[in-house]
Image (cartoon, rainbow, N blue to C red; front, side):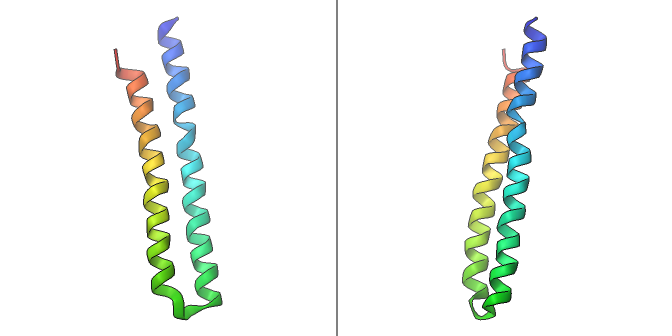
Length: 74
């Protein structure tokens, strides 16, 4: 009973990784669109997009960590 609950909880925790993938796609899609509209702001837009990518990827890593913690912790 406890083992199956751990597997379900770990699966639910890793759903956030799919959301992070969508978020990364949205960030870089918006970067391409904004660069196409105003190419002179490419550097500033790229640095902001990299910051957004890093924060979104951190959420994915936290959800992966929680999934492993639920599976292999105690």
